[in-house]
Image (cartoon, rainbow, N blue to C red):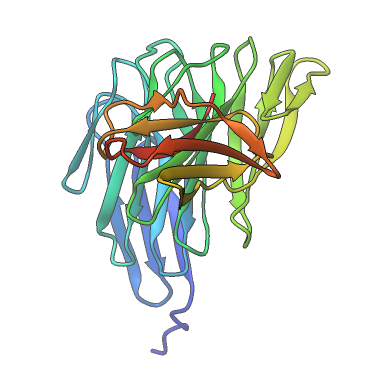
Length: 283
């Protein structure tokens, strides 16, 4: 019996039992199950050009993805992000979120780009939601987040938005070829801010759509025995931080003066200073 062309793939995600099903036309189905003994939910799935499948959702307690065990931060639900290769094997799995048992944290949308980076959105709650080494505190009960992971599962950045009330959720995310992420969701707070833009609620739940561009990059040069760090002046709200080692346990804001030079913000440091790592962090 002739097979159908094996150039399509069906991906089915179960929201209550935490499994993913991959089916290549004419070949059959491959099943993968993940989770633990508590409430675990897969909420969104995306595939990249290499055939990798990335999923996000929420889990409680301990959830197992292949040989990786994720442990929630407290008794509430936490976010998971996991990636499987084309053969259905787990490449990596990551946890994010805090210890708020009442509202928890969840991933609701995921997308990948041409570089196989994963973009995730959903909501987080409380004052200690961890995304890698980044700690976020919600303004209201539940705030929007968008995070980016590279192809190896390393957190590249996380950004958040929210107002003073509950039900500010990121629900879907998409990418384009210019490293932009487009985020959609809803908010019940009277206002919600995305970088320099503030949206005002018309009543009950309102829709938002926002574009998140690439984060600014630091340029490094040497001049007269000094190290010159610069980044675009248009990157409002970002502050220069340093750490002595990577991965960093903590980051410290650089106290040296930041000056506007042309279209760039510039910090100058002595080249004799001990070795440090720098990043731009949005406050």
